[in-house]
Length: 94
Image (cartoon, rainbow, N blue to C red):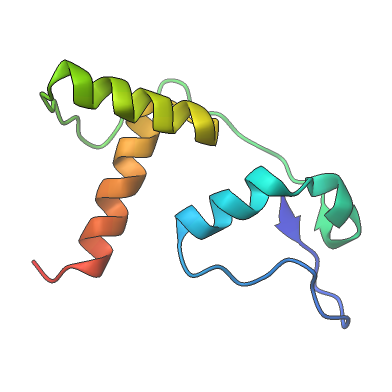
């Protein structure tokens, strides 16, 4: 969903991080913001390969904790791990 450009102030706050945005949408219904959204077309490119693949080995207990955290956010494990890695890279200066 994409916000409409209107002259009135948006009820959707500006977010400082993906985690803050995820927490907001976990506790709010998008239906309450329908007047600020518009329909968009979604295109799935099934045959397009990912840029790169990274195999990351972790201990079983850590993977289970990651799965639990992902489930609470409505994400799959690899999506959550990728989000957290990207957030960490943004906050560090490699």
